[in-house]
Image 1 (cartoon, helix red, strand yellow):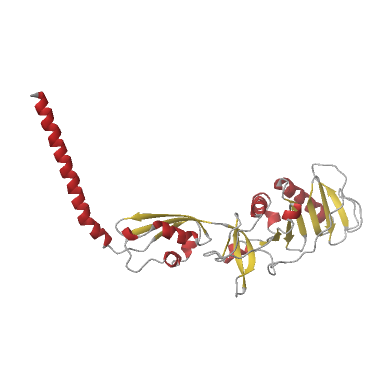
Image 2 (tube, helix red, strand yellow; image 1 turned 135 degrees about the horizontal axis):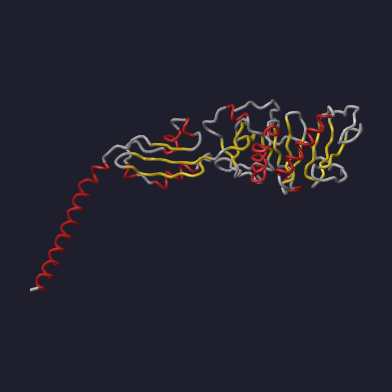
Length: 312
């Protein structure tokens, strides 16, 4: 009797399971055409940047067919369309039934501007991200753009869809970020960041609003170099002079060339002397060393404004 009862229970359980599976399949077959028939609503964008400021950007980029349904969308293909836009760093697409496509993106943030010319076009300004990607920039306020320094890259090569990533932007981005964070009063005068000497001498040149040039070593701690720069500028200003070139890439010594003569006074930098002086770094009492000869200063990718930056 026990065996018979167990056998009956097992058979009944199997039959009930078969009925439930069949029922679900029938229900799905009935509802699937209904879901497919629901018109697709406007896509919903979530971003950490500025692309949302253009209400039509997402629709233009996705280029969805007119009578598309959510169930028929190829998310991998749509994701590739989004990533083809150089301002987009990552993209995640989610289907929310019955009719909503959710798009969540992260954007590249600019650290500099570059002047470039597309094929058969007028020169125009593009933005450069930390990873060296060049993008046109959508949704940015002019005040924010004006706060970015111009970049003079080693080279700027075109591709079918834009430009190749700029080499050396990691070192330049670290310098710009450190200056913004630790020495904003110095960074405010920076107008052009040049990578022309990065490969050959591991140096980054910065040209200021006054026309002076500051040379940084890409292999030395930027915080120390910025501290030496701040001290050197204070000493030069105390003498009533302005600089033409300051070289911070000579290790523990800072060398500089003055643009205007010193006042006839004596200070810690030295006595009244010719226009070329050397100042030891605040950590070292080493004797000054001569400055390296500078290479000609030419603008490779357009004329950069030397007007004071506008606050964002």
